Image 1 (tube, helix red, strand yellow):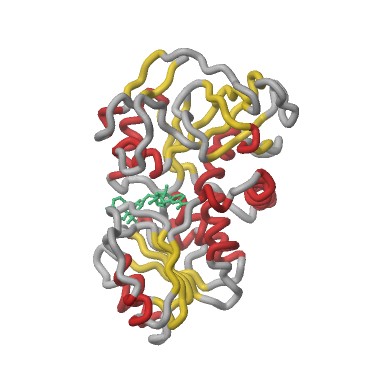
Image 2 (spheres, helix red, strand yellow):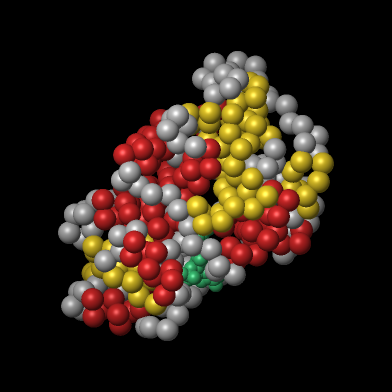
Length: 322
Ligand code: NDP
């Protein structure tokens, strides 16, 4: 089969497209014929070695397609079932073997591209707003990179939960997309000081929660945007890693809470994973949640997809098609 392989970590040029042997499903696994692959920042971290993986490997953590075969003992899915998954390795390929506990069945109304675009960023937005800091009606949240894959979903789910949503984006075009997704206010953090803007927009009170995936460039000012006893949810580092952190900062800024969550711990078992994916699929079917597929590339062009994601050119989901 065709797949992308990484033999050494580095820039986008280490993503090699070529022929590899077909995988065989082991006990508890299904072989999925992939129809659409989600591109995520975690793939960049695996490629650069920030999150180390044994070499060589096929990158990619998210896809949707059809079950082509099942391994010994598998009864949960059968050949032909439409499935999707996140946080399983080797998605940049025509086929992947996936533990069945990570598979969800895709409803007929949802096509494979939408399903692949929903799983990782969708379940992330879901756990951030419903579990990490369960945002309450009437509260104000700040979401950085509000027109990003996760960002557009946080805007929509935040509004659905009754919150006031303040977003940041780097361009006016991205700001318009965040507004369409429901953001009440959007700050152009490339030209405006987002800390003073948040203070102005909240009459000096600050917000209850900041969902910060930008990391190095934003986290200190994010602390200043919080109301006393608010929570900084640091869930990514698109601008670079944050490094060491002095807990005294939390006390100085108002007895704040800091957490650094990961999707893996919020889809800890099949029940939790299916609850999150199931709610997302229901919202999509009812029209309450819109998935914005920004760009699709042939699988062989994975390197270009990474370059565009890292260069902040994308707004919403990036897919590869095998
Ligand atoms: P996005 O679509 O949000 O893309 C990243 C965005 O970050 C860019 O479009 C850009 O938006 C903004 N950004 C700000 N500074 C930089 C920079 N220096 N370089 C690149 N981008 C920058 O990506 P995703 O939605 O896929 O992921 C967002 C973040 O969330 C990632 O850091 C990812 O690792 C993290 N994540 C964490 C998860 C978890 O469980 N902890 C799960 C899923 C994602 P703008 O141009 O508007 O500034």
